[in-house]
Length: 222
Image (cartoon, rainbow, N blue to C red):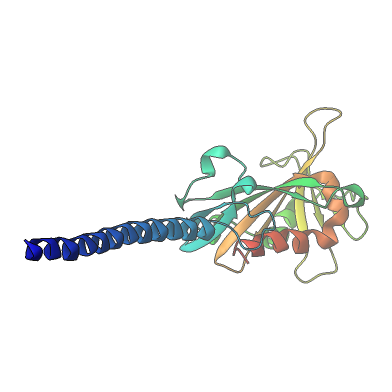
């Protein structure tokens, strides 16, 4: 009988220790799960954004871009994965007196785009009318002949640069509307960008590429 009592005394501490170990294992597993979840969440946050906005990884031309969700022009593009083109809308301080203006940016493989600077000599120059328009200081405005879809369009370019700023702008559809411009450039990652913006943005043409480029650099496009 004393032996049985002693056996019970030895059994209870052993059972308690096993239960404690089991509880600790469960807590450790929960802690690891929370840590993994936090790591995954933090990997989806762009480090360059102070508001910690989540990003989406889009792959274009073999390059991964970490893009904040609010930058996408369309909701259906706010997904992960491969893309034939990436369409963004950026509010940039390119309006009057530094006000924000919307610039649409479409990222494409280089094979699908011919830069505006190359089009100036290869295409636009041969379609210029004799007229010359006045506009933003430093830019020359040349209307295009109303052929091959160029009716009502004007090319604005910097005549003093070897790699000039060039944008083609169309007349507004409505009488009180705003003309829209296109500028196409090659980026440093094997891709190209097509910029679409309101014609008044041309007033800040000297800063345009630097300001847009700063945003694109944040997502790895430059």
